[in-house]
Image 1 (cartoon, rainbow over the protein chains, first blue to last red):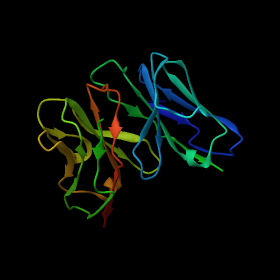
Image 2: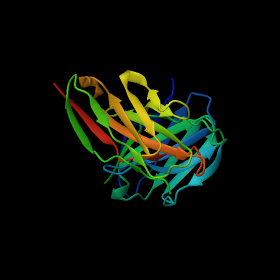
Image 3: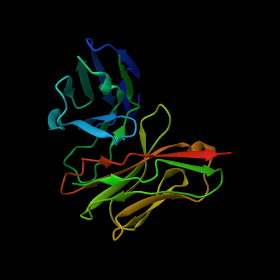
Image 4: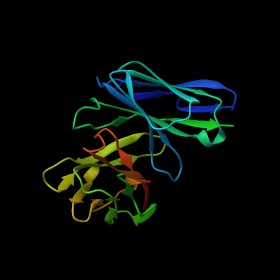
Length: 115
Length: 115
């Protein structure tokens, strides 16, 4: 595997379910990001981790719970979601948040549908 | 706060014709500028970036963009498009004041190349 991978690619869940999204980067990076991509809206930065520490939480509802066990893996735990949470969830990584040159590399995304 | 405007939500163009996708950003402080492309069912792929230096930036797949500080613009151009260029294109900005890892994205422009 190369680059940034995400699983599953598609997920359908009910509002009472609990599920997790997984992201893995094979680039030796230290920063990882979750974005939400909804139709007709700009990509929204949700969470940022740098060296496994959360450095950014953009007022994301608590029904989204991120976890970063190491610099290569990032999870997004989902519970009691709402239909408006249906979107494409993108993971990205970069060298670190501290460097001035901070090109982000994106995964293919998980298409989430909440029924 | 920084914002990015992509005025054209959709741009249809015939194959082998030139195209320009417009991007304007709000703040003229030190910025880094990016164009990403998203093909159907895929994540974002970096086309090109402006960090400093020459205002004309060349990227992959024959695309180029010009940084215009006075007009706070970073328009993307290609002299002759192919069917395979059909995709969604996102402009993104980061700045030193907010943290270069915080990308602010536009809403995207859907380029449709017609045969």
